[in-house]
Image 1 (cartoon, rainbow, N blue to C red):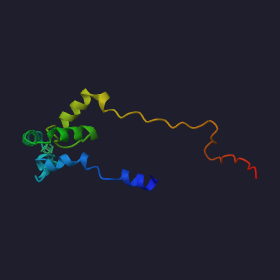
Image 2 (cartoon, rainbow, N blue to C red; image 1 turned 60 degrees about the vertical axis):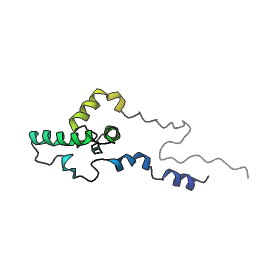
Image 3 (cartoon, helix red, strand yellow; image 1 turned 120 degrees about the vertical axis):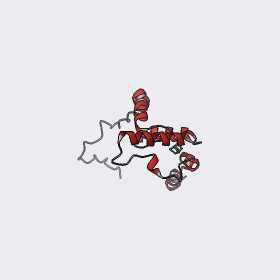
Image 4 (tube, rainbow, N blue to C red; image 1 turned 180 degrees about the horizontal axis):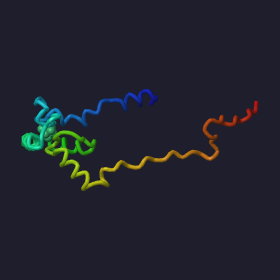
Length: 126
Ligand code: SF4
């Protein structure tokens, strides 16, 4: 398999990750009920979030939506029946599970030339 074929395979759309959105109850609704406006006071926010959560309660993809919001750290809006504050509480309760895995450190051979230096050339036998 050529590297181009491999690259094309890796670039295929992953609709399996997003197909749940096609069944979302809010798919064609105005997003105002799920997201706050700039000058929203506390009472208005509580009422808006209550309405949004009622919609989410009837949504067939509520769990997928909530999992998505938690996995990507959605900071704003009501997702899967959870408000911004709800998700902060969930994250605070599960801090270890949400932490990204530590990156693997690149190991550099001690024989590798220092940055900025050109590698030694091996004399040819010819
Ligand atoms: S759970 Fe709520 S926010 Fe998520 S797709 Fe359903 S209606 Fe929309």
